[in-house]
Image 1: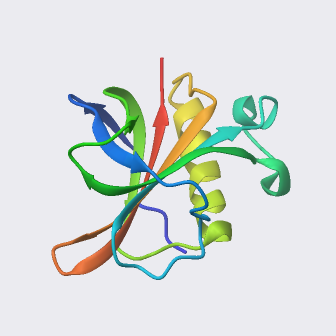
Image 2: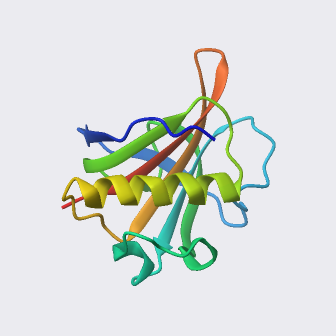
Length: 135
């Protein structure tokens, strides 16, 4: 899987979603815009060579919507950002997040301990976006 370049993104306004308990990441048929927030393993989240099998921690929340209104959000702020123009499965998302972390650390960013994964449909194709807050 070819990795797109790392981008530093400033999200000026939060994206809001309706919390959807029971929504399981990486198992849905694509249809609606989805947001998943994961807590990352504290040790793995700071390593240049994290272990993939324990990188993703607990699912903090999951939501559906159009990013415009709801009770959970992808907060405004600075992020390391990567986008793929297709739906990625769990293994591919973890691989992409690890590459994002390596590149971010190499460029002396300080990534946070959360990872937001957003699935949407844009310009006629499915898209997977990974957002990692940076200080």
